[in-house]
Image (cartoon, rainbow, N blue to C red):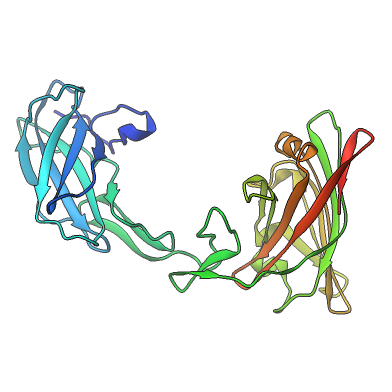
Length: 299
């Protein structure tokens, strides 16, 4: 009998059961390849295909295809339409017809980062939009999902008052102070905040994501701080974060110590970005850094 449980994609280096790969669609079809199941009880395989946004239909029994030179089995699925995204899955089955768990899916075609489109079994699927405010671009975090579509937020100016780097036993220490004028109702206990430092070319070397529940408010709801910064998952090395609304301006005070900040010691230009929810994105893309003592300063 084939091993039970969900099978994993060989593309991530885990060779358990059936692993999938796929070539480009051509002439109305695609070549689906997988590594054979190590279970000696396997007597055949079933191939599944679906269009994005729909569950799988009936599978095709491909029996036991011959091994290729690379040790994989393959099946050509036909009847595909150009411009449509398809997903593929494979299961193994035993002599008594018992079917293994579903493989990890493999998509073919354009994928929207603002849409949930996944199946863990032929008819057990999840479809719909991802949460508003989710970043949908690796190169521009100010581009976020809104209503299921990838939308560019107009980035507002973040004025940097101080951004220094110095040596610490656990990695480079950063201290940053800045301010900006908010565009919407300011409340990080509802939006959380994403902090990012990147080089001038756009490659980020430090990210911290602080969820809404990590903030506490005081001073009549005009000041906010992270209660236990060192315990926030997704915010490596965060030591202090305070945001204060005063006379229509948000003041930001940040401290972090992390090995990921070591890259900042040698970069001449930096981008400092803050993102609060789906409607607030601010950044300073004009930071010039100079060496100073055992660290550097950027303004």
